[in-house]
Length: 324
Image 1 (tube, one colour):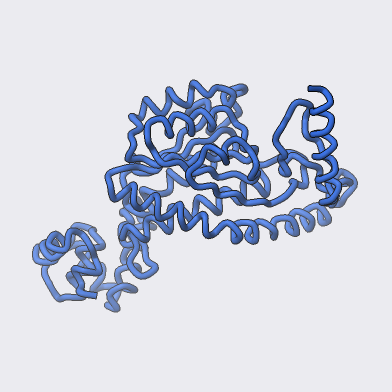
Image 2 (cartoon, one colour):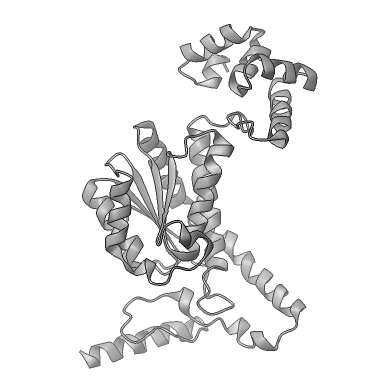
C-alpha cells in the first residue's frame, strides 16, 4: 500500500512539474487538484509592490473567461436540462459550501428581482445555513448527512435539478447532496475547477473550468470563484431567457421594488414598444405596472383588459401574444 501511494505521489509530482507547478497535494489525497497547486508566477507574491500584485492578479483573471469558454458545450447542455426541469414543474437548487455556497446564494437571490420569478424556483443551500453566508462556519462542509437533511427540508423531488458547486470537487456536503439527489431521481450538475474528482463522477453533466492554480495558493475564492460566478450567471440568464422571462434583451418581468427600478421599467417599455416615455409611463399605470400587459397594450393598441386577455390566450407567451 505504501509503495502504491509513493508511486501515486511521484506521478502527481511529475504531472505538476510538467506544467510548471509544485505539488502540494496532501498525503493520502488520491485526487489531482490543480487548484491546490502553487502558481510559479506568484512565488514571490509577498515581495511585490501593490501595482505588481494587482497586475499579476489581472493577468491571471484573464484566464478565467477562456476556461469558461472551453466549458460552453457542457454549460449549454445544463441550460437545456434546467429549462426542461422547470417547464416540468421542477426547480434549480444550488448546493455549495464556503465561497462556492455564497456565490450560489447570490445568484439565486438575484433571480426574483431580475426575472420576476418565485424565490422558490432557484434556491441555494449553503453548508452551515444562514450564518455561513456572512461568516465561516467551521466544519459545516464536512457533513454529507446535513446535505441530505437540507434537501429533505425543501422537499426535493425527481423533477428538480441539483447543481453541486465546489472548487475542490471533494466537499462532503456537496457530495452528499449529489448522492441524495441521484437517489431521488433528480438530475445533477457538477460545477468545479477540478475535473478528475468525486463530484465529477456523481454528475449527469460536468462543468469543469480549469483556471489553474491561484496566485494565493489554495485560495479558491479568486479565479475559481470568479469562474463559478460566471457559470452561474450564464446558467440562470440563459435558462430564464429560454423560459420567456426576457423580451429581446430586456428584463420584461422585472418588478417595481423601488424608485430606481420603477424608472427603469418605463425605459424598458419605451425601448420595447418604440413609444415615448410618457406614453410608456401611462400604459404601465393602466396595466398595474405589468410590463408584459403594458407592452401588448402599446404594440397592439389595446386597453389593459384586452391586452391581459390576449396574453392569457397565448398562455403567457409574449411573442405569441404579439404575433411575432
